[in-house]
Image: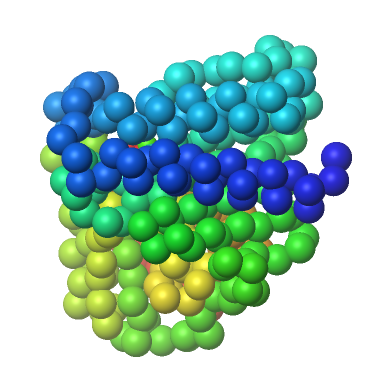
Length: 262
Ligand code: IPD
Ligand code: CA
Ligand code: CA
């Protein structure tokens, strides 16, 4: 499979989905709740996922596709060689409130789970972040590079808070641990886009968990291909908890996360 061609195809599909999503932005929404009152989908999430999954499976009928809203589609997971992970709107809560910070996130892996292609599209700003394994990351075609910042007291960091509020401390320990140490802390509300901002050097580090594959796979590859580092909170392979950084601050951030506790 020619990944450069795949990257171009996916970028086109993400762009079309962005146009679809923007038709619904700043309009009244029908909210359908999912796991909790805080977790919901709008009609735009459903329409975007339908457009993306129909287009991807038309182009790659023997691949398996995992969508946040629609579950599994395409070739059976047991036999497929390639897997798509689709978040039709990452930042739905922002989207539903008319806050212009959300994205469309699409990632391709092989059977082993190795990331091959990632595309994250911000339809408000018309910015497309993308990466292909071993070929670097770009923003609207221009190469991306993480920041060179080595000092935590000069770092702009970012995090997020899960919809699941069952843990009463809810990431607050980690947030409190970084607050006096970093130049700034931000929470924007789209994990995929926040990862891309690490790749672009706007943020020096980002942590959040638990996240799903569709939230972070595309952004994770984009960070790695921009020269950054991505791990779980213990420095291992990410599963649900993600620490992404410019690399220089990674070990220090791991130590602070470990000391903060859950
Ligand atoms: C959410 C966003 C948010 C993060 C949540 C995610 P969604 O995805 O990425 O930034 O804090 O944990 O679930 O629900 O808008 O696709
Ligand atoms: Ca998401
Ligand atoms: Ca979503």
